[in-house]
Every structure is written in C-alpha cells, then in structure tokens.
Length: 334
Image (cartoon, rainbow, N blue to C red):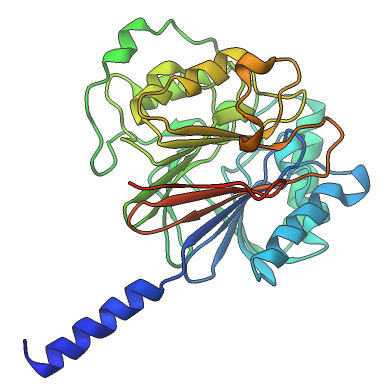
C-alpha cells in the first residue's frame, strides 16, 4: 500500500475508533413521553416534553438530562401530537432552555377543548422560532443521524424503506382496528438510523395506522431498538407490526398506573428475537407476570425519584442500556 493511502486509511480507522456513540435518554415524565437523542456529532433532538405543572418537574428532569449530555440547547424538539402528556411540557421547557427548531405534524386534529388548549399553548411557546411541519418521507436534518419521518398527520410512508417490503404473514390473523378520532393517529413517527443501528419511535400511533404500515407488506423492516408505542397500551402495539419489525431491544415509557398493559406487554415480550424489554416504571396493575425483572425497571415505586434509562448505540449496531436507578447495564451485540 502506498504511503499516502496508508496514512489516509490509518486516519479513517482512528476517526472511526474514536467516534462518539449515539446517546438516547428515556426521561421519566410519569407516563408521558420525553426522549432525548444526542447524535455522535453532539446535535440534539428531543421527542416530546412530558406534562406541564407539578412545579416544573418534567422540564427540570429534561434539563438534568440535557446537562448530563453536555447540551446548552435543544436543536430540534419533535412534538409527536398535542395530548397534554406529550406537548404540555413544551411551554415550561422553552422558558428554561433554547430550542432551535420546533417540529410537528401541523394543526391540531382533535375536537376537544383540552387538546385545543394544549395546541394553543404550544403555538404560543413557538413564538417566532423556527418551525418545521413534516410529512411521511421527510427527513429531520439533525447532524450525524438519518431521521426519517414514517408517519405524520394521519399519513404514512407508502413505499418500503431500504431493506424493507417483505410480505407480512401476520396480517391475516389481525382483526380490524377501531377508528380513533383523537390526536393519537396523527402522531409523528420517526426511524432513527446511525450506521447499522435503527431505532423506531412512533409516539402514540394507534393500531389502525400500524396495520397500514405493516400490512400487507412491512414497510419499516427490522429495527434494533423499539420505543414501545403509546406507553405500552393495547390501543397500539399490534402483533402484525411489533413481531414484523423484530426488535432486539425494547423500551417502554409507561408510568406506574399509565400504560404497561398486560396485552401490549405480552405482545412485545413475545416478539421474535427480542433479547430484553426495559420499563421506566413498574406497572402496578399488571402484576409480576407482566413486568420485567427489577434490574430492567428504572422506577419500582409509584412515588419515585424519576430515574431514567440511557442507551448508547454504535454504528455497528451494538446497543448498551443502563438503568440510572441501580447502574445496571447490559450490552447487545448485533
């Protein structure tokens, strides 16, 4: 090998070896959602901001995660939909930290006074900041990652993503899913890719939309990390989707008494190839048989300290999940 080519190869090898991992912080917002994604370049994307009120509890927990990640601002804040447990915390958070670009699906679609009020508060929080309305197939331009929008405003990708498109034999056993006139089926869903690593988060997307994206062909393909949809409720998490994407690891942002349903838990738990499911809370109503082992749960008590789960991901597909409550950590090689 020529000296110049050898030097370039060694430099590329050194850069690859020293590259920072993808970091994901699953912040406990007590049954809402708030997930902080930090790219290998240090760029940041927050998916939802939890609840308002509670003496600024959720905004402060997000700020703690941002500080731990070394951030001074949030580059992109993705609001999946306008329910209070996802969008309610945007306004108090925006008072505490700079947000570069707000990302959402467009206008509120739910005919309810509460959700209209949530949307009005969100619009006020945006003010004159940058604002991006996304549709399926769009990419959120966060440096160092490929973030593809798979659902938004009730619409879904219509063509398979790279490596996807296989016929899904699970579709024939699915019953028709009911209509949902709330904001849930309008959720912004994203597939986050870093090298060989693929992470799927679809907010509170409900079964009718899941079946359209999974049937008759699986348009998503397989993923490495699945953020269990809708906090682990049975209104979402159809077997035809969850078992088709075959996650290696799953995380559930349930609360002590919100989400974590027996049916959804079992569907995820039984997914082919799943190594482990991690939970933000012990699901009080589900019993020992439908909760994972204590090491894999960030908060065991209903009145808790708000401990988080953290994920470190490598471009080769390796994942490491760490429980902030007890520092228990497990690595998953691809």
